[in-house]
Every structure is written in structure tokens, then in C-alpha cells.
Image (tube, rainbow, N blue to C red):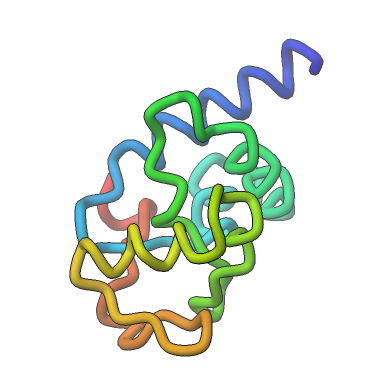
Length: 109
């Protein structure tokens, strides 16, 4: 990993650590906040490598509220279970009331 990529990942982790309990955001919203609007996929890569870094990666989903990163969590349903433990309803891998639960770093930070 290059120094530039590492620094980007660390900036992503700083944002993700600020997502409140019971709220979610998207890869694209984080990328936009970091001034890299076309880098949603890079945010996803950062989430894949975040599990040992005390980062609540389960709170980051795609722009439609789908749990597209769930296969990167241990077990079959860990991402969904973590979200549900925070009171977030998930039906068929989709967050219910996504708009209401959405946390936008552009407005919140």
C-alpha cells in the first residue's frame, strides 16, 4: 500500500469512527466529504481493511442502503447483526428507513 493510499484510509477511518450509534452513511458520502467524490470504491477498500482497527465499518453501506460489504465480515450475518443490535432494521440486506437513519458527514462534521 502506498503512503498516499494509507493516508486516505486513515482519513476514512477518522470519519467512520464519528458515525453515531444507530446511524449509517454511504461509501460515496464519505468520499465526497474527503474531497474525492469519485472514490467510493476506495472507501470500500478501506472498510475491507478496517476490522482490526476499531472502526464501525458495519455502519457504511451503499448509496441505496444495501449491505454490499457484508461478505467481508466474519460469519454469515455479522454486519446485519451489528446493525440490528443498534436498532437498525434490515430486510433482505437493505436498511429500512435509510433516509431517516442516513448520517451525512458533509452536514454533520
